[in-house]
Amino acid sequence: MIAHIFGIVAEKFGGAVIVDVAGVGYEINVAAGDYDTVALEQKVKFYTYHHIREQSQELFGFSSLAGKKLFEMLITVQGVGPKAALAILSLDAAETVRNAIANADSAYLAKASGVGKKTAERIAVDLSDKVGMPIVYRKQGAPIQTELNTSDEALEALIALGYTLADATKALEGVGTGLTTSERVREALKG
Image 1 (cartoon, helix red, strand yellow):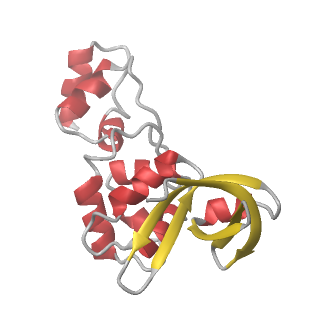
Image 2 (cartoon, helix red, strand yellow):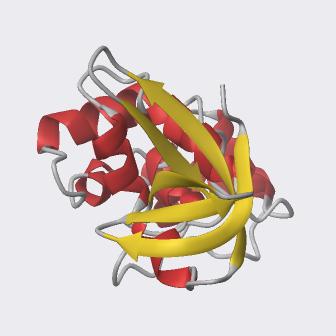
């Protein structure tokens, strides 16, 4: 298996780059963000996933190891192949996509080319508990708390009760911060 490739970008075309390594050119399919940031004649390192099928072999490259690991998780979901996984990772940075999955935001995932509503929902269900807790999460136009405030015990208590970060934040929106933790949790549960 080819774990990573380090070399010089020789060509760019159609979502792929050719990286020259000591005279050998490796064609690597990359996410849109990585494609846009690399320039010709630039030294690059891509963590790669070597996809082997009966009739072809393809390399998929990622500028971060986190992107590669998320790609490997995505292709374990039924109905998600390497091209669909790469399309999902092309939506934004790997961390943003991971947070969308952690928050089970299937509408965001369905924006990827070739990913339908049902597949996006399957990804959210299958992977939301496997990708880890959301650190930063932004929904368009929604003023929901974006970071887990570890000093907010009421928020942590609601999450421990099974609320998502977004739901817990929303439940605590109208509750005064001057109350005790147990009073804030009680008020949030009433609302």
